Length: 315
Image (cartoon, rainbow, N blue to C red; front, side):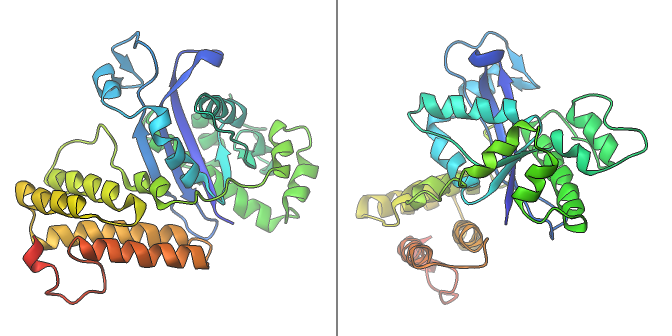
């Protein structure tokens, strides 16, 4: 079963805290490196009381989407996965509060990397404090490279993978086995919940490829702009004439070459294919969505698998 490691940075304290950054990485016991599938700043509701939060400026936050804008994208990143977080009670409670403000319920089986440390016996007795950095030292894995949510999510993924390997070597084969060993851990009760289901539209998936709002501008900035447009256009898996005209204008105005356009289309299709094939199965719903996505991208000029010269006249 795939896992989703999540990390957040917040502004404020307690029930009034607001998420200003979130990152989600996919973790697989057999893959040594986690993969970031969602990484974005979030503009908090209300006034910003400081000019800098966790190294992020208020100006960057003001330009970021609000939580309600990406709530479905977050659910899509969690879909059919067990969620892991460091100090999961705080992270999951904060996420649940944000989803409730959007009129959405959020319950999912989850693990806490802090409380799982009992699975690994060290002579020194355990982490020196509750921080992720202390846990990394205890587990002998690289600590987060920075305070960013993405670096913390990657560290949570490393810790979780170490736990998963330890569980495979030990007697913990099911969540019931794990719950029996950690019956005092607050997250054990979440094992009764089902994973978040995959949203029933591709639109919820389209933000998974969204670059960070504060990503530095570089040689591919025009491709990022085109990627944003394509993701918005194919979100409903169909392309009308007005959308086609907008894409053709964008290719011209951005000065994209045929190869750059194809790279963006390939990224969109590969992202959907990887997401749907994560469980090594493609059901009828997923197959139909991929077929419709391919048709939408072909209408925009090219889709992976088309002849090399197809779409050259549309650039």
